[in-house]
Image (cartoon, rainbow, N blue to C red; front, side, top):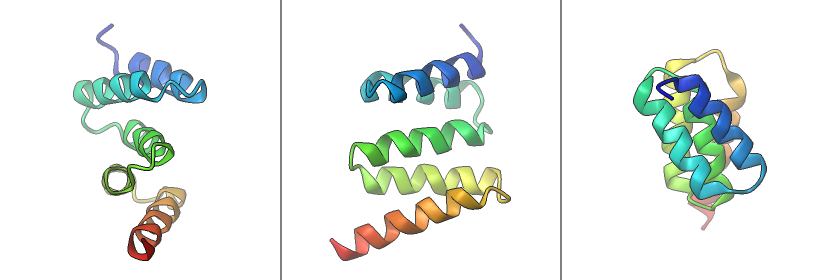
Length: 88
């Protein structure tokens, strides 16, 4: 489908099933279809975090925060990742 939401929804289902590589593909496609889709960046950040790809996850959380600055939880997660990177 050409729907960013469909790719996002499928990506979140795949992530919940721990199919992280396929989830990344779906979420990346959602972002490609709609580069302003903050929730897709946030969910992709969650997937990357679960794979311990902390630098990449931080980048996704920062983009989600830029697109939707009122979403405080994204800031919290991004701060947690920065702290983990600094303590490594």
